[in-house]
Image 1 (cartoon, one colour):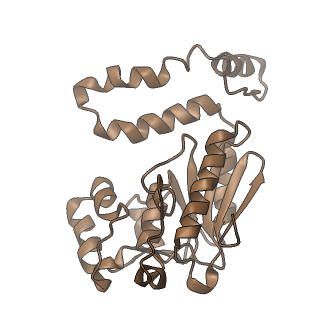
Image 2 (cartoon, rainbow, N blue to C red):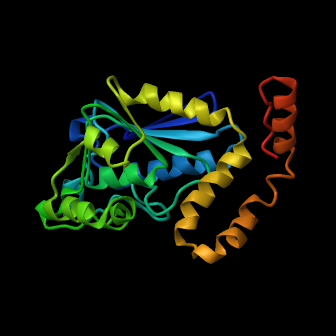
Length: 253
């Protein structure tokens, strides 16, 4: 995958690190494709249950590499869009571990993940308008779904960033840590990987997809996502483990 993105595995968790700290981890086409390839690995491997996406050197991602943009290069993956994940997500959860700035496409990259853990000094914003651009990687679409319209407008039209504390107050992120975000993200990942993988995947899918469901169709539309869950071996194992007061041994089937 090259040095722009580092990928490691530990205890069922795939850690993906944007490795361009001298450019504040600004996104390039090669980095986007490498992140997309890492998500393919997560999707394909039964022994991987969760991913953490982070940045090296105390930065998450400062958005699109503008030098590449001026050369005519867009930092997108053919399927995953900006950063390899903004227009496609794997079935398994992805946690953003944010240190420093998550700005422009970097904020959109974090929003594309399922959970966000941030260090106290992290900052979030979509400053594209300050450069005559638009947050086209999902920012101006996702923020009005996550925030009151007026707050989303303020972020989009001023381009000014907000602190991690403000992002937590608004419900945009899950946790703040006083040290590097990666350890808190690993703790969250361990909590996820201890659960039934089929149930985790189905829960993520329903939460994401149900945004588009009419209220009177929710029960019917949820059915195909869960119809195999309650008859799965994992469901029986979960019940047995509870009755026997032991940790479950998940099989993913």
